[in-house]
Image 1 (spheres, rainbow, N blue to C red):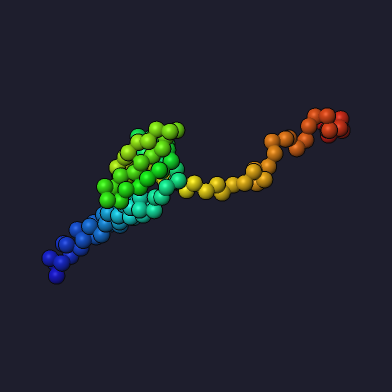
Image 2: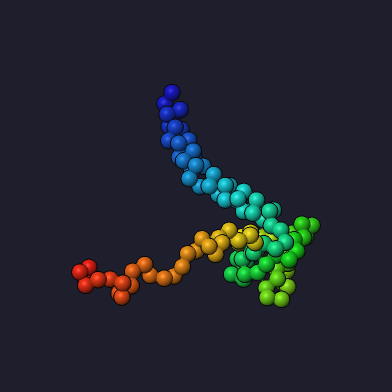
Length: 113
């Protein structure tokens, strides 16, 4: 019985390490893998070096991606892609509003000041 009680803290520490270190790392790796497998032509991509471009070609056999950076075509490994964003624009111009102030000085009365 005493032998089992000596191993309980060790097992608890191992369980805590799993939930604080290993599990989040596996979730992040799965999320990255899903992002890389969902890449398609026309999506915007940013490499780990900070280069921005548009995906022109995805080669699954060689695990490479060809980025169009203002007319220059560069080939990268899939692992070198840090972020991918869809090419669809979600915000329309009407939703942005105008840049005019609500209340100008000419419109205010002396009583309000």
